[in-house]
Length: 100
Image (cartoon, rainbow, N blue to C red; front, top):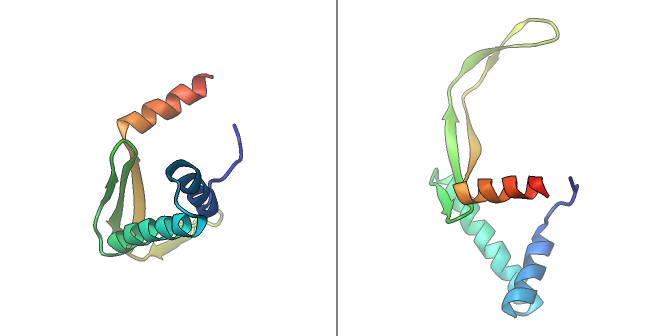
């Protein structure tokens, strides 16, 4: 399996090649989309991208955890966590990629 990571630069370069916007406009478009997504998640809204998946924020309540090394109980504070649920199309596409 490849260790390649897709970056913002890669996304803006893809927009530049596929859509034909200038490099600056492509980078601005990618930044704007990511900004809208992160702002919505901060507000607690879901971000659903058809055929890709859904990003959402989950509230986790306080609980008692345990240090695995010492066995000592440690309180874990309540927090918000980001979750991603891939669409069935994305799951199928990734699974098909494993076959080749």
